[in-house]
Amino acid sequence: MAGRPEGVGSAVATSLGLCEGGASRAVTPSVALGDISPSRGEIGSAFAITAETAVDVPAREALLDRAMGPKRRKKSSEKLRRGRRPSEGLAFVARDASGAVAGTVRLWDVMLGEGGRAALLLGPLAVDPTIKNAGIGSALMRHAITEAARLGHAAILLVGDAPYYERFGFSAEKTGSLAMPGPYERHRLLALELVEGALAGAQGTLKVAGRKLKAQRLPLAA
Image (cartoon, rainbow, N blue to C red; front, side, top):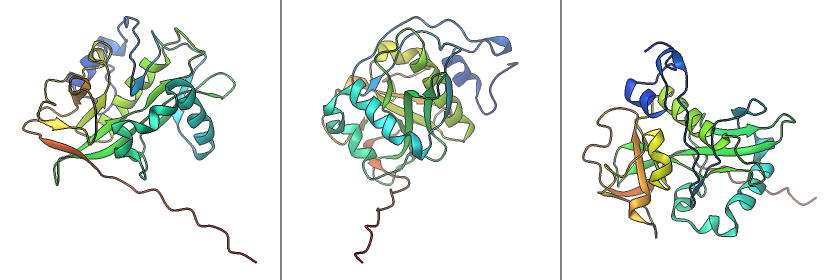
């Protein structure tokens, strides 16, 4: 397929809505609630997606508080993120024309069951609630999926609403034998295979994996 992003197979390219020549199909506006909080439509030219930096952390956390509220830290997905760093090269922000953080998405390394195969958990995905109809959420999703495929990952899971995420290729078809490590709605555990057959026979509760956060050292008293 001409114009397909490097590292993206035909099935993934189809799920991303890429046509011949690399053009993007129109996306029907929608809103999903819960662990994933995307915006609507296609991204405007006034925004750019870049790798997250340490300087972005305060703005990202403030944005997540505004978009998802104080209960976001009690979600079952948080148990798989707490004390860990995002998967290498898979933390992104959307910036407006001034460089301010307008959206965020990160992906995390997990294992599918005890000693199981590796996969990614996507989330939280959020967009500044004051910005509407800019398509930042959709653009962040497409960028994250493309980069995960380019880096050689085999599958992505998330907790979200199927009517929105099915346009990116996600479904609950292959998550019936998988579970989150806490309360969740089973029908909202969705997955996308980046490599065909990556989730065949996968079962068990998702486990923490990946890089640990470094403990901050307190300054010594004089």
